[in-house]
Length: 449
Ligand code: FCB
Image (tube, rainbow, N blue to C red; front, side):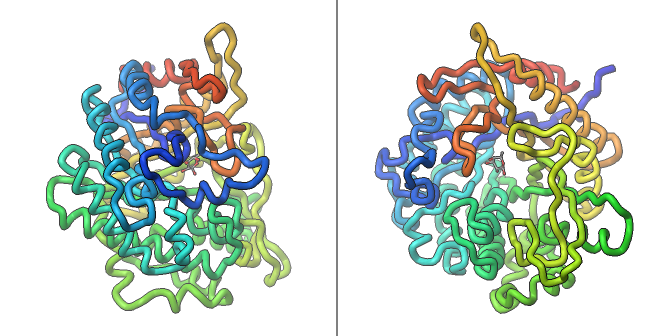
């Protein structure tokens, strides 16, 4: 039996600038925090990544061959404003041509303004813990909109502020590599503020456009249904799933979460009068990234740090994933995806959802010019079925972007994790369609599974 998706369902693939572009010093581009963070011996950098800056025509051609009608990509602030403020026209020209190329193939561009690559010059001034970045980000958003806004209708301000704030400034696993939980909370707030100001700026520019933010969610599981486990799950859920969502919905930060984080002493003082109103700009859609659930357990010592990106979230711990894992060690659990979408449907009434990322890394091998990536095919089939289940049960899901079009630079994991529908040989830059690309093209062509 075919599972059909609603008419007009938006099928796409997604990428991010730093993960694919390479050419990190071309045409006046300034360094971003990821260039600085990876400038250590033995660490993989974003050069050459997929050399997409020079091969973008070929890559968009591939997308066209697959018949996938939407393409979500990000623009690099440090190409457009190398010092975070001054415009470099050559950077804008690149995205201007990219958008034209995408449109020439009949593909709809979806632009993300910030996918983690802050200009280093702004980090030198303090980075996201500095609230002045929120206004600078809005200026940048408007600059990009002035050039692309006549052709781009779908705008995402920020991708995964959870990771940008808590992994970048909390546990330091991502750029800029800072371990300061108090600063991480302030960074989280300022990222939301930057979203709100950018949403206002984009709307003030007029035109018909859709404004969204992309959040990453991790539904929380526990083994035992008792008060202590429920409270451990609640803590992680509020930090991971509601720190960003609730203020966006106009509900402010959940009081229980403020209490969980009060001992860090930085979040409440960082919330200035009027901030929550700015953050709560109406959203046209919510971008949802889902990869895996999390498993929570209580810690007996209420003062003990947790094993989560913000260790100061006390009294809970994150357990190792179980069952079938991806090569990145992420648990495969499509039913959690359905649960998440149904929960969002209830928690955010009237807000349409678009899956902005979902996908999996596995060890792929090119054999006789083919990549038989059955595990990824199964992952996509099961997760698309999970989305379909949620739609059948009432969730308003309008689209699905597969992560990712190309194998790419997977942040702290360098080039060791392949998420692409298209295999990239990072020595020769040869592209080979994986079986999952053919599978996905077929789903898109049928609008069904
Ligand atoms: C998400 C990121 C994306 C990619 C996937 C695997 O958290 O948004 O850039 O790295 O994970």
